[in-house]
Length: 329
Image 1: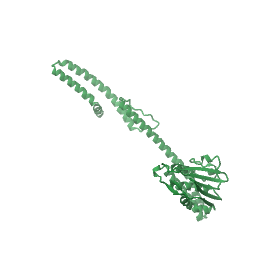
Image 2: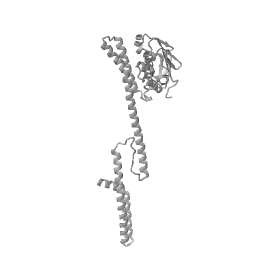
Image 3: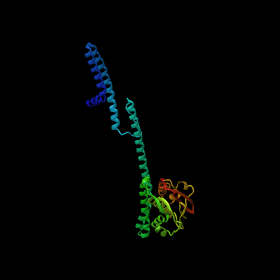
Image 4: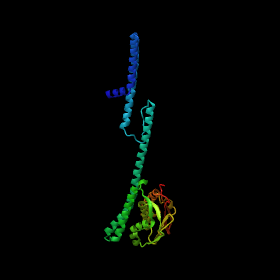
C-alpha cells in the first residue's frame, strides 16, 4: 500500500507542488501587507480540506485502475475474450488504449493464422504419410516373399525418395521471392537433367520418349523448375502403362504429353487443388493430392503458369508457360 501511495503522490506531484506554491505565495502576500492572518488560515484550511477530499477520491480510483491493469498484465488475453480497460481519464489514455486494442487484435489474428497453418501442415502431412506407405508396403511384401529383385526394390526405393523430396519441397515452398534465382536456362539441359533421373522407369515400363525442339532458353529458377518437371514427369510415368511420353518446346511453352489413362473431364478443373486426387487417385491409391498443387504454387512464384488438358484413354498434356521478362520487373 505504501508503494501505491508513493506512486500516486509522485504522479500528481505537479498538482501538489502547485498547491503548496499558491499557499506560500498567499502567505507571503499577507506578510508583505501586514494583513490579518485569520483569512489566510481560513483559506488554507478550506483549500486543504478540498485537497484532502480530492486526494482520497482520486486515490480510491487510482487503486481500482491499478488492479484492473495488473489483471490485464497477469492474464493472457485470448482472441475470444473482449479486452476491458479501465475508464480513460485523459485523451492521451484513450489513444494508448486504442493502440493496445489494435495491437492485441493483430496479435490474435496472427495467432489464429498460425494455428490454421499448423493444422494445415498436419493435414498435408497425413496425406503424405498415406502416400509414402504404398512403396514402403511394396518393399515389405517383396522382402517377405523372398523374391526381392534388385530392380523392383530400386524402383520402390526411388518412389520413397521422391516422396521425401516432395515433403522437403513442401516445407521449403513458403520461401519468399528473395530466395529465388531467376536466370536464363537452357530448356534442353534442364529437361535432360530431369530425364536422367527417371531413365530407369522408362526402361522398366518400356516407355518410349520423344523430344521435340528443345533448343532455346527460358527465364526461370532452375531448382524450382526442376521440381515442377519432376512432378509432372513422375505423374506421366505413373499413369502410363505403355506408349510414349513426348516433351516439346516452342515459343515460351513446354509441353509434357503422355499416352496414359487420362483424367476425367469433371476432375480436370480441380487437379491443382490441394489434397484433390480425383477418380484416378482414388481408384489406384497412388496420389496424395500434393504434387500438382505444389507445382502450381511454385509456378506462380517463379512467374510461370501451368495448364492441363486430358482425355480418358488418350492421355494428358501438361503445359508450362514461361514469362517473357523477369517476374519482378
